[in-house]
Image (cartoon, rainbow, N blue to C red; front, side, top):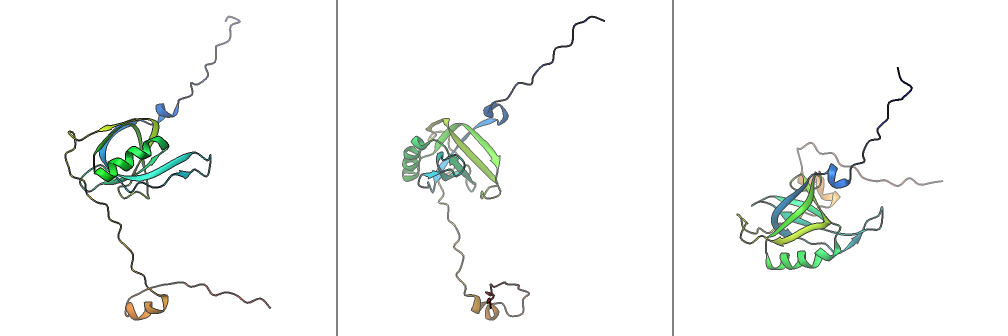
Length: 155
């Protein structure tokens, strides 16, 4: 046995792009939001929907404010875009169950010759406005539970 001790190796830290596989997506832009500020770090961002198929709409967040004007133009002209170096993740709030993250490093180009489907308007279904007092008359005979707030008076 020698007096030499085994050398310990420290793990190499992975950068975010190493952990999250970057992808390329092609589609149409819908519902570009105004600029917002992230609550956690005050970073500027905007949201939109990205149509990746005939009837598939993914939520997208972009942390690249300079891309907003390009996205608004593509939305207005209904022109398809190719986005390289985006990150895909699961999302419970997205219509498709997927969310796309667009970064400053994301490359944007026209995809007019590569698109295999047409622009389709995304319509949100408006929920009918119902007064609480009208509920018993509308759902007679069905099992319905509803809760209401009753303020407690202090004496």
